[in-house]
Image (cartoon, rainbow, N blue to C red; front, side, top):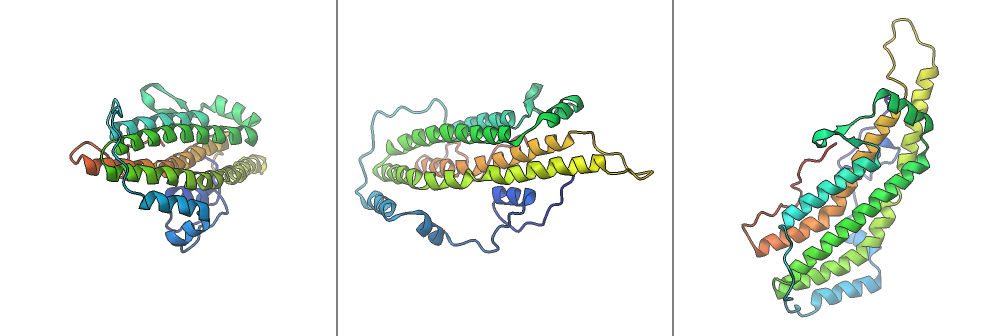
Amino acid sequence: MVQVPRRPVISAPTLIRSLARISTFTPPEAAPSLSDRMSQWVGWTDAIALSSALKAPPPAAMSGVRSAAHGPASELTRVRADLAAAIARDCGLAAAPGGQIRALSAAERQRAASFAEFPAYRQRYATSQQTMDTAISALRTRLRGQLAAQSPDTARLASVDTVMERVMGTRERTLLASVPNLLEAHFVRLRDTEQAAMAAPRAPGAPPLAPAGTWLDTFHRDMQSILLAELDIRLEPIEGLIAALASVHPGENVSEPGQHDPLPR
């Protein structure tokens, strides 16, 4: 496997640590407080909308909202599994029987590496982001509908979440759209490192090199791990809504935030 020097990384969310491992990006030693970040991201019109949603009298609980065919936890598990499988496909990893992820064969890897260009992976990354955005937004809307049907207080929470999705969604998409730029630099480093190793004279007794094209398999898996970390971040609001539903119906099988089913890595 191609080895690219990795730097030590300070404690940070998984996505930030993953990006730091593959790039020269350095996470801040002390992250700004949430209130400081919010003051930068939320404009005065957004602040008014949030304030209005928080201060408005609790709306009446909605009636006639159909329950989902499965519980919230099951819905989250299904959406997470579907998106993880889509990410594997977009990263060039094929699903083998049993749901395991199959690495490319040596012949496939060498051929793919010979023709690999990053713009195709930039498009794949954008496709994965759009798939996540669509599926998660639909699930978030369904969960808000369930909250709105429970009580006036949970209906108000659903109203606040509607505003938060609009306010924070644009900022989130802008930040995450920059991730492919870091991946491109990683793509080039992996490719150039293998090419330099293949071209360098070999000393007698030196250990054998990894098969040609191994760098692309490494890149596929790094891209997959970063997209899965991004998926976790995108699902955090969903976990919050599920926790709110669990508080209304204690004892139901609802996952707590941060308790995820294992994903293929």
